[in-house]
Image (cartoon, rainbow, N blue to C red; front, side, top):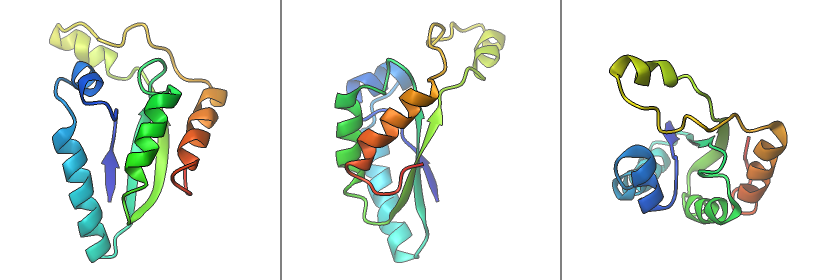
Length: 123
């Protein structure tokens, strides 16, 4: 079972995604319970967005939250990509992350290391 998680801070999540993350966090806790009950692996995927969710404060808070998920199999970090740019253009909407670039391999590994303080299996 896969779950995506973009930002731990509700205000920053709202600025990024258009809504806060209270329901998302509650649902992730419920998904963890269901996964445990049915013995299904839970994988949380986090896009690493430079300057948005890759600072140490955010990653430590994310790790502390994820550490409470009892059935978490692993955390998968995904490098930010710009595949949505064309979709936004077709919709006539400005792309909110226009100036964001891909995270380099070093930044990806630093992000993983910060979460490993809380969760063993991070890829």
